[in-house]
Amino acid sequence: MKLIFLGAPGSGKGTYATRVAPHLNVPQISTGDLLRENLKNNTEIGKKAKSFMEAGKLVPDELVMELLKQRIKKDDTKNGFILDGFPRTIPQAEQLEKITKIDAVVNLIVPEKIIINRLTSRRVCEKCGAIFNVLSLRPKEDGICDKCGGNLIQRKDDTIEVIRDRLNVYKNQTEPLIEYYKKKGLIIDIINDDPNAKPEEVLPRILERLKKVKTK
Ligand code: AMP
Image 1: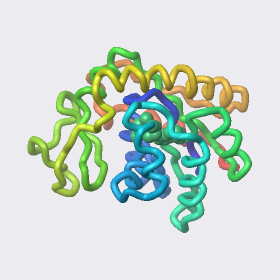
Image 2 (image 1 turned 45 degrees about the vertical axis):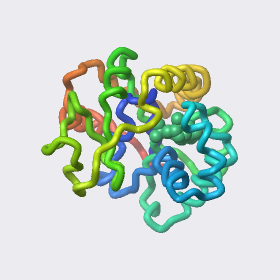
Image 3 (image 1 turned 90 degrees about the horizontal axis):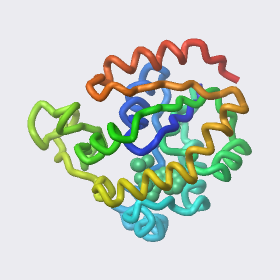
Image 4 (image 1 turned 60 degrees about the vertical axis):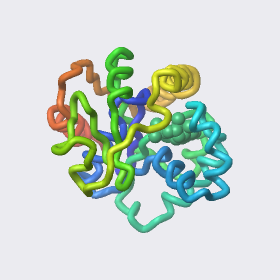
């Protein structure tokens, strides 16, 4: 199955994409993670992407397309994939269409107030990328990843100023994709407006909806 997870920053794309992926036996592919890896390794793409990412702006389409094309060629995508954070613009969606078919788009709907709370309290593992939250999804031991023992850090772009810019970018450049995919009949809306809902409670709702998806 080939899926896209769409939603504002902090709507839970990464949290749910990583949990749904093993159920479908497909990889979760996050362009944000791919870019951060390039930043860490100081690659040419990383150097070009750095200033955009730190300002909460979108990285130019051609850089992201290049990374995505390379990634979806890998063997582990033979059963499909979940794209997390891609596409983020209509031109990206149009280019994606030229290289592969998409079976459904999961649209995570979360009120802005919850998003801001969630992003400012988000922590990620610097080693494996697992996502935690100091308010709602605490690790067993403070500052330590449950999965691999790595250090939990706050992303540079999870500060209130950058969060506001990222939400504006989402509204202006990414939100039009909801209409784009609605017209194609691909959207599955998942409303998640309970700030206390645990991922384990929301996950079955997503899986249930995905059972009805017909793969192309
Ligand atoms: P994320 O981890 O998905 O929140 O992405 C972090 C940052 O990476 C974003 O704020 C953008 O600067 C960049 N980024 C990730 N995915 C894309 C994309 N599809 N198009 C452009 N920029 C992206």
